[in-house]
Structure formats: C-alpha cells, structure tokens
Length: 283
Image (cartoon, rainbow, N blue to C red; front, side, top):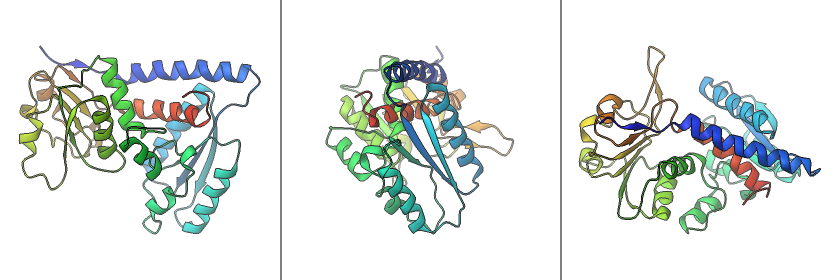
C-alpha cells in the first residue's frame, strides 16, 4: 500500500493552538506576553517570506514580535550592537537572526553574540553542546519539529537505523543528535559519502536535508521505512519539490512527509514553543 502522509500542517496547527492557550492563560494572570525579536538583513525574497510567516505566527498565538529590518550594507559591528541591546531588553525573550547573512558578515561570530538563553533558533554553540550532552535546553527548531512529527505517528526508535542525509550545523548534525537521544542507531551521510544509495537502502528512518531535488531515488527507499524530507527547492516552473523522488518513494515507504506541508510548518511552531521556553513560561 502507498505510504501514509505525515500532515505537518495539521500537527503544527495543533501545537500552535496549545501555545495560544498557554499564552492566554499567562497574560490573564497579568503577566506580560512573551516577546520575539526578529532580525532580517537585506531583501532576499525567500528570507522575506520566511520572516513574514514567522511574524504572522507570533500574532496568531499572542507572542509580541519586534521587527528589525536592516540594509544588507550594515556593518558587522552595528549588527552585534543591536544584538547586545536585545540581549539586555527584558521585553525580548527570544532573538531570531534570519539566515543567510551577507557575505561580509561572519555568521558564526554574530550567532555567538546572542544570549544562549534567548537563542530560540538553537544555533548557539552552548545550546548545540547541551544537545550533544543529552541535556538540551533550546533545541534547533527543524530537528525538534521532525521528532514531534515522528512521535505523532508513534515511530519507534530503539533498534531502528536512522540515516540522516546532510551534516549542516543547522539541521543535519542536530537532527542526528535528536535521533541518538531518542534511541536510534544513526548514520550521517554528507558530500564525501561515496555510496549514498547503500546507506539510504538501510534506513528504517530516513531524514534528508540537502536541498537538491530528487537526490534520493525512490527505489532506494526500504520497504516500510519512514521518510522525512526536509529539503525544499523552487523549480523553474514555480513549484516546490523536496530531496526525495516522492511518487516512487511513496510506493515503498510506510510514512512520508509531503513537500510542501510536511516539516516546514513544524519549524515555525517549534520556534514559538522555544520562545515560551526562553520566557520560562513552559519547560
């Protein structure tokens, strides 16, 4: 039978509804609403859309959004000065710096300037280190969103072989750490992997986060596997597609995420959840 779809939109909506209730009860007690500062640099179309979606989500759940749109010519020092001021602002619980940054700005250096307690993207070395030690605080949004999707379908981890395709600090590496914490045996594939098909064929749980359309062939998918496609690319005709050959993979997998409508909505929902954790409204 064809794979069942994992509806990220529905699951994310349920999480946002839960967050809305928590924020309403919090504010009903006379406490200030949680605040998220969003920094966008330049006019990149994709980044502009992502930020717009995140700000709209804040409004939906009652989180205050403090928007800082800066020119792509901004000096690195001025950006760091802004972050330092947000670190000290008691009305700001979380700071989101939309990536990618202009080439003249050292992204790693700037991200390190964000207070780890306000690092709602989970990109700071402190938070990634906590995750590596199995003592997570603020977790990277997309990997945590994937775990929530997997938990929703009752995915088992112990004794399962999880294969992560992609080793970025933002998705691939923390995704592998999340799966390790869950109890899976994890393999990470990357640009130096010589036989990608060999590893993909072994995956009980496959997570791909490359951003190359169709790099994962449908016939590689193990029968009954769970397939999570994080990659998303806009084709010349304007349509969006993932890393996995969806039609063929769907005939072999037990569960699969669509693109769009799978992992993407969960990333935003977890960002809101992280904002509440940063505000110490929830654990």
